[in-house]
Length: 191
Image 1: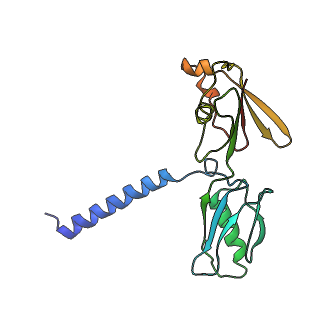
Image 2 (image 1 turned 60 degrees about the vertical axis):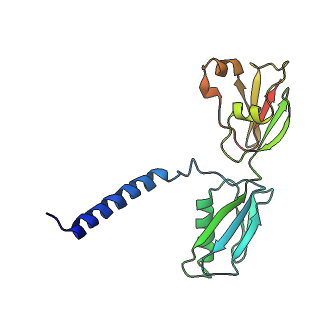
Image 3 (image 1 turned 180 degrees about the vertical axis):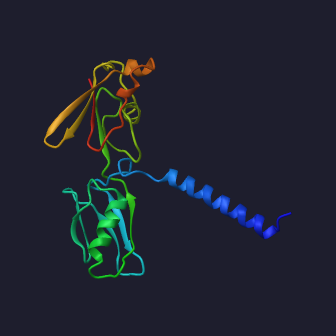
């Protein structure tokens, strides 16, 4: 018979390994991580540096400022990547800085729903929002909406792209891939 400490140690090691596997599966890839947007409010803090805690508004140009770091681009970066960039710049002044960036307010992730919906306008998307969800946020379509001629307009650099959306296909459970996740700045046009 094995001793209680040996069984206990084996159990703890098994649980630790299970936790590590679960934790590895929970890690968000860079591609899937939320990208910071102009208008977002961040809290940046440096561990053991009481004077290095700031709430920072991401400017319309996508930049932000932080003491000893200066200006840097925040828009389009993940929170993890921005933390690494700030830590790298601070390392000139603070040995081995531990930087935490946390989202305080997701004000920059805006989508727009216009046309024949109950409440056209600008909506802050605090999570991933697809086309159907955006239309629901806008109160649904009016009776005279052209449900099969909906367009999603997306800016790519200087160019605009338009994606077609047929609501009746979604109702029928067909062409579900057209119900794309919207990105910041996307416009859903319901004619």
